[in-house]
Image 1 (cartoon, rainbow, N blue to C red):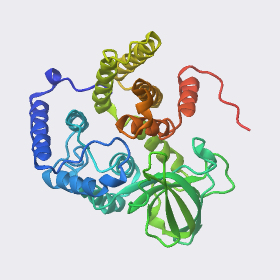
Image 2: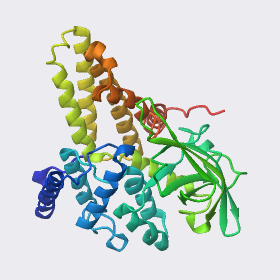
Image 3: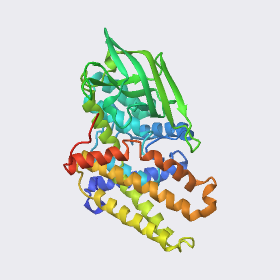
Image 4: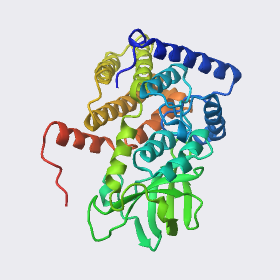
Length: 381
């Protein structure tokens, strides 16, 4: 999604941008703003993120395009885009976590009943409810249609059994968005339903996974005879695949115009490496220049109009592959010091995970090949 150029804004949106800049500057000065952290809320910033979400909600900066009856501000998505842009410029988190505001929130707005919207959306905006995502499984990561977690209808309830993995912030979340098979006799994506599950239900066991960065942002979650009420179902029974695919599309395209600003900052840092005294090697300089060319190609694509799910897949693929390679060259330039702990080492260790989160690079290439280039579908056993 292209950024909203200040000179093309209406007077009303221009004034909104000015108020946004003032609010963020004041919040940073008062020390209440949570620093930007990307898609996943780091555990050390959990408490600060909660306080910042509450601050945003009370000051009228949360859920800008959400309807007022659900705690939002009733503005347009252009207002939300400006908010994300200015948060990116100020290097401030625009929300508590992606899984709540962008994924669960938008899914509930699209597919939820009136009761579900009123029950969950205001508490999400206030930071009272933190969400996690229960999609991937040990044997169903990128191939989500093969998921095995079962939600068996039992009267007015569902009984869930299965295991999920790579669940961001699962150890802190009050709610989770869950995809589970409700029709065991129907293979593939048919027979899968979408749920909003309370994470404190009996039978849910959350176990944090320590990454090679030393953090434990991700968890594995075991569901053993978990009884969910019938109104946990979001959307139609056995019709959760469409709800889930819309969520994944939101996830892949979530950076929008703010991602463009982050990319520009990354390109400036890469260009600065060319002037580094340690980049005199022609091979290294060539690698940096290749990254700059790739980055500017991605920037050009992001400046275009939105091209739908395939475009978000292309942007996700190019962005995460660029970040991975850029983190590697930064560490190379440090030489032996690259083995020491520090920001660059942390970025390098963190980068591989982003090639998997939100759909692996291999899956994004399949989407682009099949939906854009018209190539034959990948063979499936």
